[in-house]
Length: 255
Image (cartoon, rainbow, N blue to C red; front, side):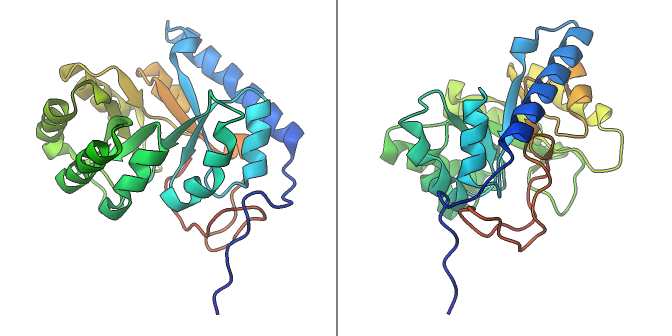
């Protein structure tokens, strides 16, 4: 018999002071990086990556002033976020992990932004779900800038055609692009490439940069950075379920 996952509202006890301090420090670094690039700090949105974190940790971040969160898995997000929305109307949820077509309808109902649009079948599923639900989240095309076999995202050489097709189909609901550069290489050329593609297509949103490289991303025009461990602390090992988590989650989107 398989045990049910813990309730997201259970007795998890996150380090609230550490979460507040983490948010403060990341905010200061974002501001410094933006000013260093001749940009306004308020033009960079921090997405706090809360995957595998208990609902109590998200609540602590909300109480500290953070409003935008990122989740990899629809099922986990569905267990944690809807109960918070009535008390926190400014809350915004980004889905940042690879999205299966059979989860598109749930994603459309749940998310404010889907950052991982990366193939025609998923575009079809999102469009159909949007028609049924009467709502469509903001959309970002995820580009596999390193053409890595293990990662989601439209390949580089298919990116222009796919972005153009999505722009024609979704209009201004297609807001921009997202990427995850290869690990252990200089991310700057990948960020520059993505920024160039966004400019070519008249898109203003660039989601790029995580805990290890968000300052470089800001220097190359990022308008969204996705940071998790520097705010919430180290995530559990793959297969380990944290107390108060909504679902068992494996290795996914790094942050």
